[in-house]
Length: 156
Image 1: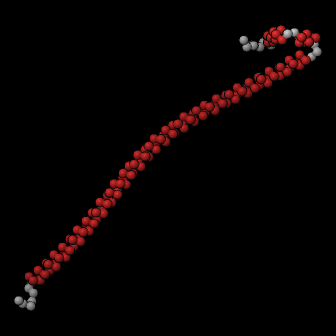
Image 2: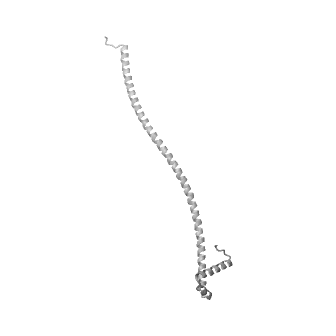
Image 3: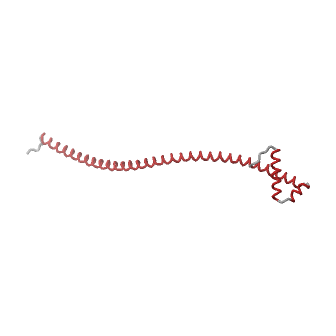
């Protein structure tokens, strides 16, 4: 054996070193790829779970949208009904004011009739001495006569 290395010996040493380095590098890359692949699988699983959750959230939001649409529809209906109630209330208030005015007029008429009856008229005292039924009949006849003169129609 000689103390000198041949070109072939050097080539074999270089090839072995390169093969060893390449094998080491391949092993490192393989380990890295395995770790990256496992990590990607974990990330994919998490993303799948997130997608499922987002789908559930979307479904819930769709349900909320439908409910809000129903609520808006009901509110529109309620607003319409409240407007109708307000209109009816205004009409009722007008009618009550009218009735109040008419009642006040009737009260004034009754007061005037009492004043007339309170006068010391012999016909009135004779009238007051009659039985109540006769007083009512005479009062009714007088009211009908006055209503005809005043051109007022009485309820039947």
